[in-house]
Image 1: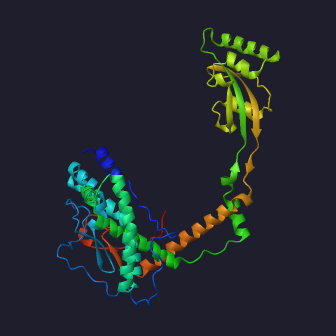
Image 2: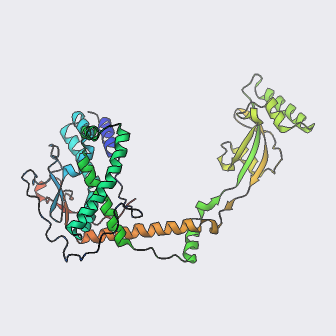
Amino acid sequence: MTFSRCTLILLALLCGCAGKTYKVDNPVVGPAPPRKVKADAYAQVEEAPSSDIQQAGYNRNEEKPLLMTDVVARINGKPILAGDILEQYAGRLKEAEKQLPPRKFREIQEMLVERDLGRYVETTLMAQSIRSKLKEEQLTAIDAQLDKFFEMQVQEMMKQAQAPTLMDLEAKLQEQGMSLATMRKLFGDRQLASEYVKQRLGDAPPFTPEELKAQYSKQMDQYLTPAQVKWQQLQVSTNRPGGEQAAYKVIQQAFVEMNDGADFDAVVKKYSDGPLAKNGGHWDWMQPQSVANERVRAAIGDLQVGELSDVIKGSNSLQIVRVTGRRDASATPFEDVQDDIRKQLTDAWREARATEIIDELKSQSVIETLFDTQENADSAAAKPAFSTIPPAGLAG
């Protein structure tokens, strides 16, 4: 197995939705009915005593692949299993396991877990927080509402997968290592996470005209339209029979006809062998600096509208250019973009506030993971089994 092959497999697996975005503008779940919050919402989070859960310490050099029942983290004492993270990749991981040696396969498993674990922890914490504040009948109503909206997604999945029945869809998901039950749980937790942020978010502060104008000035480059020019080109190749001397004769004849009143378009169509000769050599609006030929760029930058250039000699052609139109640089007025700027500032405020909310929740929780920093690579015994996740905010 070559390094390149391993890299391609890894990239294929890592390509996915790993961002940390919690939409709060239109969540599925409405505001929960009011209820008194427990003094310690997580004081009685129960351990999962299943004997199938592996409690072994973590060894990054271990060649044995992660089992789906291996514990990779704990949230307030509640285990997160490797399968909670890796099930969505099961189909591709199965293929990768056939092609990679055990150590390489283990490394890929760890990379996927480490990449997605932060988002999984945050989503789980927020969903737990919402659920801990609800009575059983409220939870039943919320779950019924989530079931309804998840069913709509299932119908769409059936269309995309061309699965005529629910059993057919489940079978196709099973082939990829997924299940509707897992997808339903992920869907519900993400919706509850969005609702948690929405409940805590509040309204963005009003932004003053001075703040809006300051932001406008700060990102003025976004509202600038650079100077543009339209121009025509008569180009004669020097690679023709007779070389440069023959090309000069053609250019001179073109000048004679233009001085006699011939239209530039007609002369171009008659004598030019440039790329746009058939349409009169017209180039549409562009920034002068986008023209590759330095001498042509300088000419169209300086010429007045309607003015002809001198003969411009290039490495394999002779040219005459003419400017047909100019647009000065301009800026979109503040009045036209102030609503957009206000939305930008509001979105930035929400992003920062959401980060604070999530970090606050995490700071009140006990979060342990298997991904600690190994102080001594040669001494596995010196390495603790778990490490605490540092506060991580909302990332786009």
